[in-house]
Image 1 (cartoon, rainbow, N blue to C red):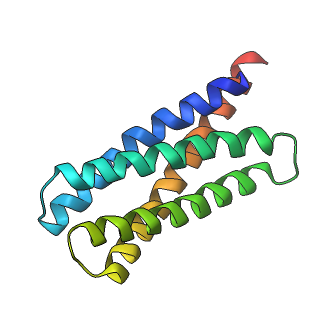
Image 2: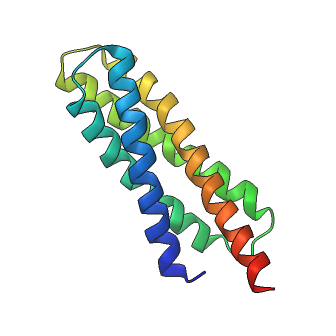
Amino acid sequence: MDDRRLSTLGTGIGLVFGGAIGLLVGVILGTDIVSPLSYGTGGGIIVGALAGRLVRANRGEDAFAVRVVGGCATVGLLVGAGVGGVSAWSVDASLTSGAAIGAGAGLVHGLVVGGLLLSTLDQTASVTE
């Protein structure tokens, strides 16, 4: 797969799953749907784009899959904590709780995006051989 397509694919996957996770958090917390959806989508775009860059940067390295999934999980954790803190601050909620919820959601998001990108690479490699 072309390297530019990896970033685009990562961004697309991140957008969809980030929006879905934001929507889920909004429903669970019983708040309005628009704010968590917006924050989740924005954070998802960031995580997805960085995940695509991680795949490109680590191609050909030892333990490629571990690097990609671990890096995506770390990026998701950090971005999720930041987005969760900002979204909690915007509604006058506890920053610690918001950051913790965002970190958990971001960790799951990073794992899903990294796993999907790796499965796409494996599928593409087996088709071209």
